Image (cartoon, rainbow, N blue to C red; front, top):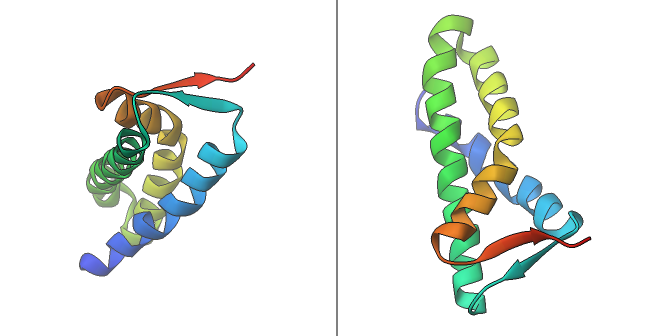
Length: 98
């Protein structure tokens, strides 16, 4: 496949991130809204990197379509730590709101 396969993570991230950031009982502790937005953007970059590595590793073993599906599934499981890491890199803490 060509670069068209990168539509998958770009379409998957907004939905999953909206479910995580909007639905999870979390709150942001940080300096300002610009850094929070930058943290969300870095979460996207981390998600794309994880998805790309998983795709590169899994496609030779499982084939094109199954490799894309497994890469998307496994990257979805890594969304929460990736979002927290992206926010943490810019100085914003994501804490559980209990």
